Image 1 (cartoon, rainbow, N blue to C red):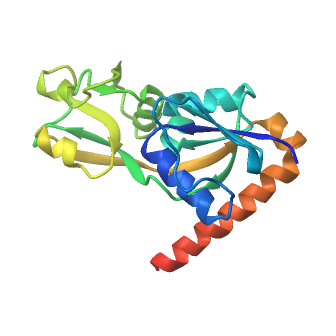
Image 2: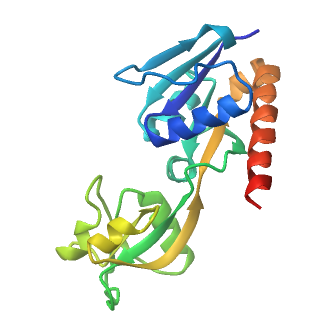
Length: 214
């Protein structure tokens, strides 16, 4: 059996995805001591996990240091990496939206959009015929409308609580986001049987969870 290297984001996505792997019948420890580990070896299943920041997962997979990975659809849309998207795991569900101060209009001449998703934002506004200036930020996006840096922000929304706490309201829904299983194209060919077995088991588990929710 071929060894399989899986790139996973640290934190909530890892915990949810790991639970799906357990439910799919993979022989993994019930709990994993995360601490500061960057790699976790599971010899029983010939699986190795690489733990990284969410934005780095598709990079590892594209360059082949990981055979497969789990990445948010937001990251995949933003980066447009050369990877195969195999399965929607239906976990870590959220969405991308525009937001701003209540009862405000965008500047008619040069509307400014602050975001850490410049490609997603530009594509969206181009699609609705709006010419905007994109201001790329990496943190505290909600601050931009409050200090007059931007008319709107484009950011990921889970519960909406952060927007509300900062006095912002949603204006436009842009796209739904969930975690996806992705594969390196070469690994997909070389380890296709192993990867497709994993996909089948995960898909069965995802479908069962969906049935239970209905």
